[in-house]
Length: 381
Image (cartoon, rainbow, N blue to C red):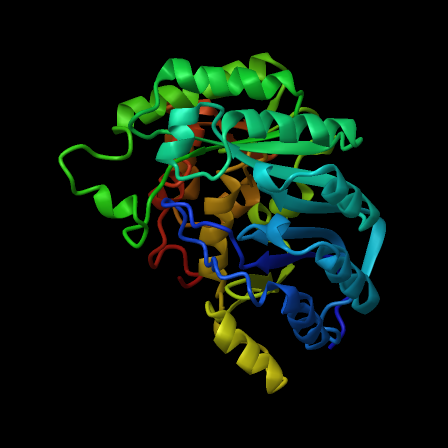
């Protein structure tokens, strides 16, 4: 059945020149079949034409979209505009690696309609880039940002990572200050987390841990938040900062607000109306499914009201908007828990919503678990 509510559109580009040792996203370093990826997206998008019609954001992530051959990015956006409705005012974002940024590619992105660029810098310190296994150096990162500015992309953001051995407070502040020199409209400052399936994650059991101890992580987080808010950035989600309201990431905000989005490409996730589904994490199996004109699903689930409430709390307490008090009142004992959070100064209440404080952001994943999800809720879950 046709759904007229605008959704977000995500394309997972599963190709990288090298695999970062901390990354557990699905990606391949074999680029021999990358040129055919636009055809894959067409095949999958055609399977969703009856279910989705209008989108108000497009995000190409991965993987590393900027490794695709010249012209393939424009072909993908052309296919999506042909099959779906994407308004001229839509936020259209592409993730890039500094090593891939050239004047020609930036012109291609502009012609393809991209109005937002997310640059995976991670650090401006050479030794830290080596620890993180990045293929660019600090000078290349700075040159990429300069090119982006020269080509007229005013809406661009940087990703930075902190919280790992080999990094110091001084080196982290140096990376932040270097980033601010380029006046990015958006900054994502991620605390390093590791999966056991990654090369760095597998080293956690060694005598010298990879990740900072909890108190040091806390210190870095609080200092980062204070510095960036003092410089005029809005700390609108645990890891994300925007220079102004209009630069808050439209697409990513859909995830935190439980709004509908469609994911295309291997390992991509989708959500709408309490249903979540996700694709096969294998390009080979993904393509086999498309050849049979079948959606390349690996799994799906229907979320009952209790599960939706829990997720809305978990997502909401990660953002400065917080969660509506009406939602908290649906939970047995919810107001009592809220009063405790207020006493601990982990949340504030304003305009009918409970929003995390800076200290509350630190416990964003734990706060929802304080609420009673047993029989008193009466909503399942």
